[in-house]
Image (cartoon, rainbow, N blue to C red; front, side):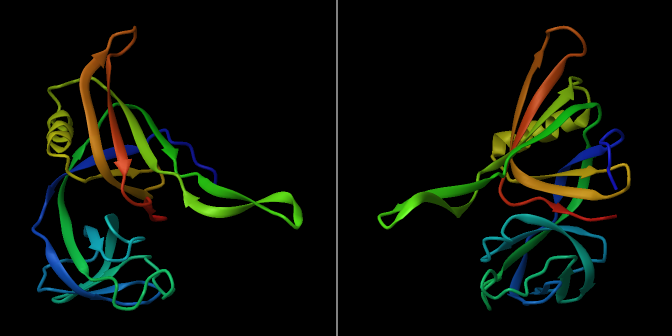
Length: 213
C-alpha cells in the first residue's frame, strides 16, 4: 500500500536503562539472546550492541522475553555466513523513555546507496562493476524552533555527549521505524521567512529497523 508521510510522529530516546550482558545469540529466523537476569517484556525497545557487525547498534523490538532470554522481533540471523556462530555476544540496553519531537518540517534520509567497484580485464573489452557495500547514511531533521520544548534539551545533551541515540518515527498506519546514530543538533534558528526552524542531523550507525505495525 502506498503511504504518505503526513501524520507521522517523531520522538528521540531520552532515557536508557543500564546495560545487560548478552552471552549468546542464536542463528534463527528471529534471534534469541541469552542475557543476564532482566525484566524485559514483549513490546520493549532495545539497542543491541553485538560482535555481529550487521546487528551492532541497531534498535529492535522485543517479541518475547524470559528472565534470561530476549527474542528480537523480525531479526533473521539464520545465515551463519553473515552472522557467524558465537559472534553475537554483546549487550542490550532498554530505551525507557521517549521525548516527542513535534512540528517536524522535514525528515530526510540521505546515503545508504549501493556502491560498486569498477574493474577491467585484459581479455574482456567491457568494464564490469562488482558490489562494494553501501554508502554511509544519515538523517536530516528540520524542526520548528521552540526552545521551551523538551526535545531541544535532549538533542543538545546527546550532541554534547557524542552519545549514540535512537530516533523513532511512527507512520500514520502505526508502523514504527527505529534509527540509531550520533545526533548533531544546531540550536541556531533560521530566520528566512515563515516559521523559524532548527536542524538536527543523525549519523546512522546501522540500518533502520522497521515493523509493519
